[in-house]
Length: 395
Image (cartoon, rainbow, N blue to C red; front, top):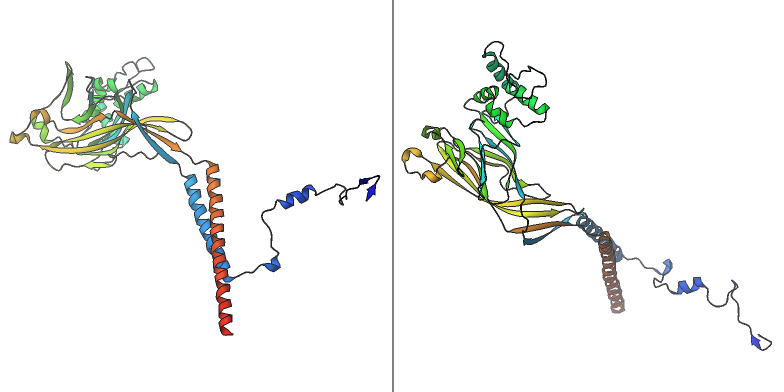
């Protein structure tokens, strides 16, 4: 229609000329639909759909488990840490040695020696069956020792008494007085008469459990429990004992726990649970430990400095009566000889991002759906082709 020489454009029903925004978006639809009346359902299509659904569920569960699992990545670099201390955690039982016979010593290649270490360690008496001796029995023995002393006996508290004239008649009372002030009682236990009496009360047939930790220099060295009283003179470490004592020193032991530094998820301490029993005679157990410094970083960024280790062991039976003994290497006991690797293992946790998990799930669903569609199309057209041929042959 022309009005004044101009042609008027046809308006749509909504008052706007040309295709609407709705129509334009509709034209972008790549997922064309087929009316339900034109859809054909087949047995093969149902079977393929069921199998593909099961496969998608299995793959989804597998991918979800992988997403929830924290992976660790290892790197090896040269260890450049200096001046650090090495913490050794131990829990060892000696079923045939009394606590008076168990003495832990440590030394290293730098010349530092620690003799009869008591700080941060605790000795507990064991029964012949390996169970901890009850506090009631220990208290009864201490009370018996007190009653054997002169009337009016008042044990010295060695400065830990809160009141003038306070008595510490038993080793337990002395340790409690020191603990109340936050003091370390290990050194005073060596001097106190009441504690000496408690130590002497350990009868043959008892065992001893040694638990706690010690700190040493981060260099090669060893720590051991051996026969005799240890001494350190002029940078020389020696053990003093009588020859007849070797016949009764049984170095049997159970290593409940031995680690170097803090634990982290997945760490394995190869000596945990190790038990060595010596039926008769005496001998020396040696554990040669190779430490690998380890830096563990969890998914939250917290770093733990610790050590992993490998170990080899050796046992030599000692018979002093035969005379065929190398005196320099014939000290009965349990020795842990350790050395450090020059490399540092960096272990870090790696968490799979959620976007990666989401992408994998979409790939699983899309891939299985596509492959299932191809298989279903092949089966459907093959079935139609076979049916058509059968009809033509029937004619």
